[in-house]
Image 1 (spheres, rainbow, N blue to C red):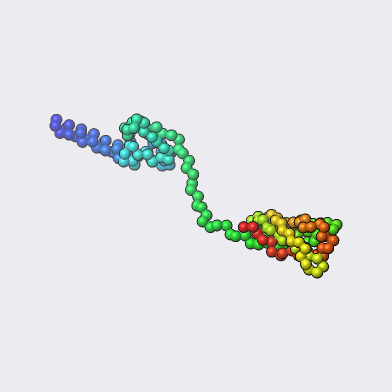
Image 2 (spheres, helix red, strand yellow):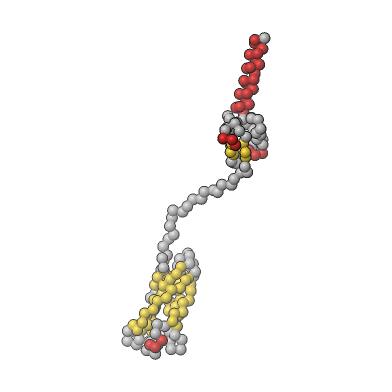
Length: 178
């Protein structure tokens, strides 16, 4: 009779050990589709472990209390931040298309952008008389699309001096604002 009690205790201890090692516990069932395997639950060495993507919390402040499971939370995937800064803008080119006159007091300049992104360029024009004296300087800005061109119409600096104006000189370098 004494041996029979030992066998019963040994069997109970072995059964409890097997259940503990395979992750089975009361009140908690694992679905095989949740873990993506065709076998049953298991593999946990403690019933308090949780290998799901969902979060869990224990009520009552003790580890033996009931477990409340919430829906899985979707965590954002970290993205690599670029440590490379944007390349500095190259200057564009400016070409005089038409100088201001008494009949039309606007100077027309075509500006080209060699950059792969839109940029703002500053254009400078000098208004000169017959002797080459600079009567006035003017500057204006224009936004030019990536690898494109834009036409800029600039008002003459002084309409009173247009009758003495002989020609316009445009700085061929359109400065990119950085």
